[in-house]
Length: 221
Image (cartoon, rainbow, N blue to C red; front, side):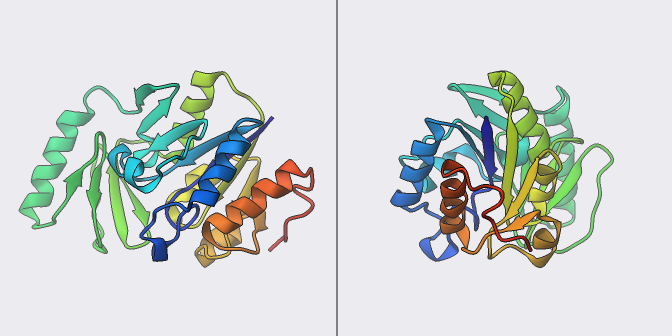
């Protein structure tokens, strides 16, 4: 069983499309998901994914950087029970420091934040220019593990990404794949680097899997 776990922004969707997934890419993923498993693993909130990915029906969604899992219409919160109390105290500290932020269902988002800061009861995950504040030990990789356990699915995991917060996803993968537009440090960690950017790169990967040419058919970086 092949299990593909793909980031969304700059991996499935392109910035020039305002991160709305193209119809042909969504259709390819939907078709693939009828044969194998495909998970969208993103830092984004569920409400935004409904706007950015209309018509996309993967096997499951790992949202908010692994802190919110949606499979079979079931939502799973990947956070300790005291997290929301901790989250409020972190928010107060951010306000005192004058750092604008917003809440997802679970995590805290800080846009265009380059400052260094740490919290005793939380971790900060970078994603290019932005940051996400999460419960300890919560990341894309842990979210994927929960989704697979919930569905009782086993197989070869292929993780696809482009930026720093995809590193934890790489850790749980049998094959680490970077799209062509990935950051250099992500390409250096990948087993394979695709020829194409964004969603076109993911379609390239799915075609290789479906044709039986993966992993031999992928360009090794």
